[in-house]
Image (cartoon, rainbow, N blue to C red; front, side):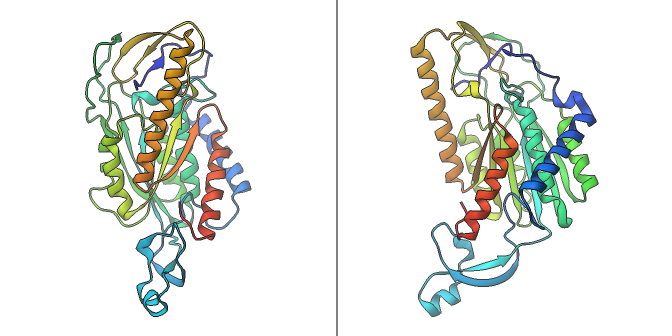
Length: 333
């Protein structure tokens, strides 16, 4: 399915987040702080509680428990599978893998997809930076080559390495705010990026156990990023945040709609008045999202979907609450 987006947005929108600079980022951080502190109470809040290194008590195994935490001595003595609880590590290291490729510079809802990426990064930073935790990021965008719009002819060009930036993991609110300013100020480059290469930056060199959050629309072929994500899951708890726009799920009935692939520049005109075409598009989009969800599930990553036309913060709060509830019941996914 093509990574196509309408050439013109149906509704006017404010300038990109990077252009609105410090004032908008400050308001965003204030919004995140107020809502998350009010809805997610506790001294130690996190999207995915750290596995920790200090051993705690054992309990019986329940479906969904991480088999890496099996307590084999207790299992052998009781002949019943047990897992070892661990005390959450207060000095958790969290890494963000932020996809800011050209396909993220699009949105027909309340937000652009890239704005949701920055907002999700702000929420994750707020939830993990407290208690002396360290947070770092790797950022990927397009290759920077100019991409003229042209008619659709055959397959799009293969993905290139893109522009990859690494921000070292540091502790402290001041350093976290500097990280967010860098993310918000990143210029999206034209051309295709490589989500697999972005994720692979966190596999080499190996890092201490922690949490990795990958924020992307995951529109790149799963064979490009699924294997690096599985490798990452061997050592870390992984959360995949999928950013979706409603026009990527269904087409409106607006007559002839010019659409363009923001990464390759390929231009195509679609007759949206045809109900059969709209149904085929919706079916193909649903199949694509199901494939993405299956690849994320196969990699062992927790999956959170944020939409540009919904309250992303409320969706995130619900996800965190569900994760905590699942862990108290003994399940992790």
